[in-house]
Image (cartoon, rainbow, N blue to C red; front, top):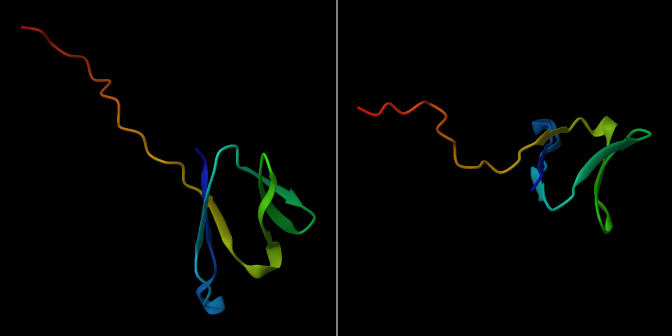
Length: 71
């Protein structure tokens, strides 16, 4: 499941926002960053606001790919 973290600059004194959901898509429309899912727009933020957007998918358990030696 994709997740996005929106971090505002500290000068704005706004809370950071995490958006989770199935089928999230990030697009840029004009000067806006827009997150949508199957039902429509979930979140939109203007580019001039100085926020950063980072995709932070949930971590899965690490897979051990090292070969096993049988003695």
